Amino acid sequence: MTEKFIINLHILIPALENLASEARQRYTWFPNAEGDMSSFVEDVNGVFDDALVTYALEDNQIIYDRKVTEALHELDDAVMPVDEFRGPEEIINDPLMRVVREKAARVLELIKTSKREGNTVEFWHDGEPER
Amino acid sequence: MPLSAAMSDDLQQLRVDHAALRMQVALLKLELAYDRAVKAEARAAAADPFEEMLTVSAGLSLIEGVMRGAENITQSAAEDHLHNFTQQMRVAFGLHVLLPDEPYLPVFLKQREIEFLTTLGKIFDRVDSAPWPLAEKHFLHHSPMRLEFKALTPGQSLFGQIETRLESETLRHAQRLSQGLDRKRQQAIGLRKYVWRTRGDAKVRTAHAANDGKIFEWRNPPASGHPGDDFGCRCRAEPLLDGAGDPYFEPVDAVQVAGLGKVIFEIIRRVAAKRAAREAAERAARDAARKPKPPPPSKPAPGDIFKRPKDVPENWRQAPSNKGEGTKFVDPKNKNNDVRIQKGNPDSIWENQRRDYVRWQRNGRYLDKNGKPSVDRAETHIPLDQFIFKPELFK
Image 1: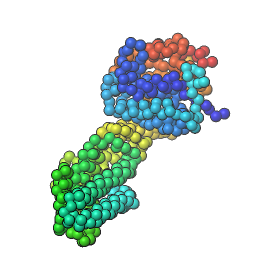
Image 2: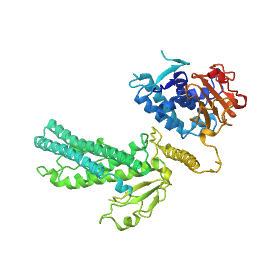
Image 3: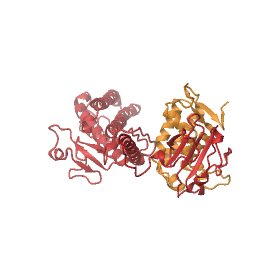
């Protein structure tokens, strides 16, 4: 039986939003009123490990559509050279993060307008298949 | 194979043809304007102020045609250079490098364009007679470029007088532009050195032939100056990356960077270094598999940083996490069940991320240390020494 690849949207979208915005990074990567706690490592692992994007990409699955899939590959390339073992301020100010923010914002923008042409994965939200 | 040889001859030829085509268009515009101006001149002989205005208009139209032609040729040559440059980078480093952010480019191109226009003006200046003195005067008063245009002898062939010179000046302009952009773009991505390449024909001057194949630094030019500094020089600077002979600088994944020319080189370095580390680990693993008694690795492979926590099923697949030196254990039947252990970051702002911690999921929902689904991020970052796996949750 062909394996069905799942993408956890409730993890993917917030993690992408954090990676796409310096303002979000300054909020969630530092102590804040809502206790919304994250970091560069957690947001990257949120997208690629916990939302299960890596498995789908490695298996050449189409996530939403080809443009979104390509943009996720580019985001994966962009996060690779960023040194994560630093404080949040230093990571945010790293010029490489400008690239990461641009790539993540691009993914979000493409997701918003995607018509899911050619999509081969199943989207889940909060432990349930998307309805 | 030298890069200069690797550069496509077809592309080079295309660039020359393209520039020549645009020059022909400019020439046609010149001729049309010239004809109109000659007729206007004849009518202006009647000293009709209106006809005089027409003469001025025709002269300006001609000059504007030349200016547009110069601008088109300059833009076209710059676009061709960008194409050739990215080809060069791909051949040299196996990388697709985009240079969308070039703040120096508009000023640089405008300077070159003005130089080209000035040269064109001098060509026209050498042609005798001045049938459009008003046009010239008008232009000199209104143009910041002060293009001297003393026009042509009525009835004399425009092409016959200036075609040869115009062609050679156009090609020389495209050549100088490419040489200048070699320097700008190589330095913009952090390349410090280049290899001097001549055209290798009999026209190469002795001093430049002596430089052929030698490596020079951009900040420390040879006595002859950089390629293109001497008048009429046709030599080129071939990009050179420090460590280009290193096997890990062989083709790697495409790296596309928008808006950050200055950091591209750093990305290349880091990507190459990480690739090298990964390949070294893979080689070590392959060697280890072949040898009956492998030596113990000095450092664990990325996916083996953490041992399998007690009670995590043996069939859960072990792999490195995407970022931050971590190990994850994944349920082969349902990838939404996993345990991810991350190395602590002493510089983290969060106390529970400064030491090694665990995040685990059941059906894609994060769990607290008691195995209950939770959206509280603090609760779902569990210190490794407090983590107890509960196999009953996954039955």
